[in-house]
Image 1 (tube, rainbow, N blue to C red):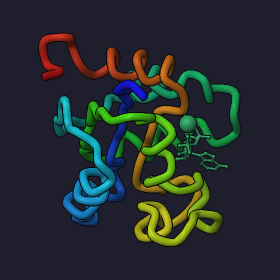
Image 2: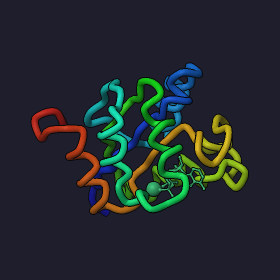
Image 3: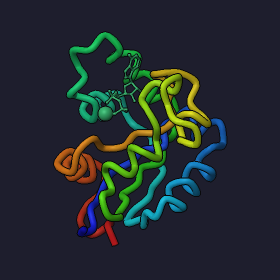
Image 4: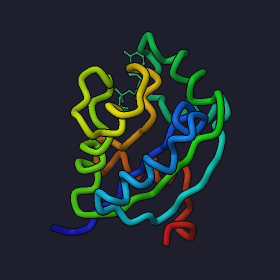
Length: 139
Ligand code: IDP
Ligand code: MG
């Protein structure tokens, strides 16, 4: 199988709680290579644009508020079957349903404040990578 890229965010809750190092270690132990990594903070307009697919959902305003409350860490990741593997490392959106040993099971407080984002398909991953990284930044 060929290498695939995916995009991930360590969300403001996990960065503020000092969990970024452990989450990065879990991602690396799962065999991902880091192509790009940066700390940043989303503006309201950026968070709305990034999550535009959810703009009609009842949780959209709360999600934008949460994602802009503090610094995040954005990452470009590579491995075989990267999109599906990262979602395995993350665990279910609602930590109550997340499998043992996943990031969300270990660290997430609830369905909104769930510590980590991962792209849901290779096509989405390319759009999300482009949102945060230029070609020259991905090594
Ligand atoms: P995912 O992050 O597991 O792909 P999505 O359904 O794409 O989940 O939702 C994006 C983000 O929106 C979630 O990670 C979570 O932070 C938030 N979210 C999703 N569903 C709910 C909900 O029912 N209530 C509050 N926040 C939610
Ligand atoms: Mg999603």
